[in-house]
Length: 500
Image 1 (cartoon, rainbow, N blue to C red):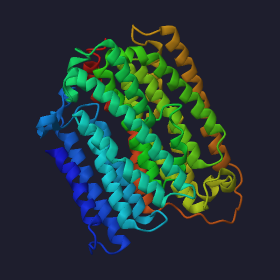
Image 2: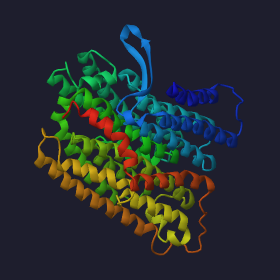
Image 3: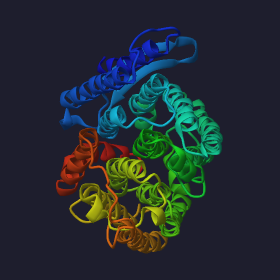
């Protein structure tokens, strides 16, 4: 019942805020505290789930709720977590809480904080539900719940190009959702079940090779839109650039992970023959995304847009790990999901603070010398940048290194020369990643400031409160990768019981 409580808390709070004519929390300060309280309570429930989880049986769905939902259609309200989904549940609750902390003193332009708070809470329900759902239709419902609140957040509180960005976001994601639903139903109808744990146990048994290939391809494209997989990524830079800070953090930190999580949770175990048939194409698209994202970053003049394109490259490493169809590669993908959520979430928080102080995200207008005029802000940006470029000892290193290792030794049924080539291209992408982040730091943290007399406000207590946990976790996971790998390795080995 713990996951029902975890989603009931934000659901009840959002309903209370959206009731027409409600006099609850009349001022913005009260709304800010309310958001912190509700998201903090949700985080505490998530942490209690992590505490109650039996890590010696991490491959088994735990803390489950399994009730009949619609008997005539065979639908069940089935929730639970294993070692694959638990880290993402905690990450989602943490980033949502940190967004409310940040927003309390740094609200988005445009007012209507009551609606903004309610939409973020609805968004949290959808994100959490996606990671705990164990029925295909229930998964799809939660997967779709996130679309409307994120669309509204971009449209109502975004930048000057928000209307076009929001429209592109909703059109791309709805197209991906259509492909995804077709692929899942194709597999489910032929397998005779909608239960995700049963599909994983069967490993494609009873589903013909052709159906598996078609189903996996449809799911790969559907999840690939959200991932974002090149060339289905073009909605992402605009959405990130125009979204308010909290929207960008949750979009990068959680929503992108829903695509790669779906590939691991649903597509790989339910259609293993399809996975083998499509693995080469998935690996090729992944490494194109790695190099394309890095080259696009080198051409950017806007800070948020550069970070957005960096996500295309980083998530390319996650997709490459999945494409190897090996335990090492899939563990790399799951590790990369968490590392990217921590580091890129921090980067978007910092980008929002920089834009608030300088009035722009344009790198030329920001100028250099931030270490002299705003040393603390520059220090956090330097840490986040070197973490994102994959410095050993920080979280970003392990996901990329393990993905390349997985490509060096892919599944025995795949072309090793092709994947070794992918590994070499991915290594080039890692070098280019270092190049654009070091170029960023040289442009805005070093050198002489454009206006040496300008007074740049020091970070507020609420900014520190949002940034420091992400810094600490980036260090923890980077220095002790077993913290995460010990949780995911068991479920991944169970997953490959049918793929190996």
